Length: 285
Image (cartoon, rainbow, N blue to C red; front, side, top):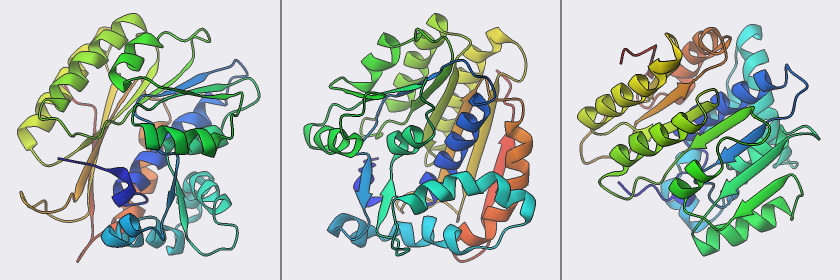
């Protein structure tokens, strides 16, 4: 699978991933001590939804565009509003023309004492990311392969924070590599929060990844790995991505209940040709 993000920015997978990212960072705000966000495959930072790539796929129209227009209960909206407010801040004219990637969403939630390390190896994407962060002293962009960065930057000096692992899945062994590199990073920093994104196309590969990550996380005790999958339509083997997955290691204790509040209310606006569905569980190793 080739997941070039310019074609998919703002789609349903981004909505789910970035909502969880915001909820985790909001939880990290509960303590005044500084934290660090490490984004291993950061991308370009900001995506033009009027570009040829975005228009060709048009996935944002059935993703973030629908969520911005949807009605939510007061309880669910209170949880999703911080994420939507960040997206709106990049669209001040109220017309949806831009979508922020994970490094800019993370940057929006950094306090003065917090920091961001964003790894991006592809030259054009890295150039755009540097421009998007405007040489921000709290946001460091490094010319480094994400898998190398994953193990090089943990543990951070702050000893608090989040690692987002969101590779493009251009290689056939990406699932195996994710499990192995995560295990190495977790051995160095077992108390960090890890957010691993994966596409759900090959059920055997996703089940193996979840089992491997859960087994690694189990060294910290039960409930240390939360698995979320969200589907907008049945997945066809040769069709576009319709199911997305997240593994959250050391999840905030509030996160599962927050997702049980929000996810049912995202099933209808994000569903394609019907209502979407989600799966939320603590997998066994």
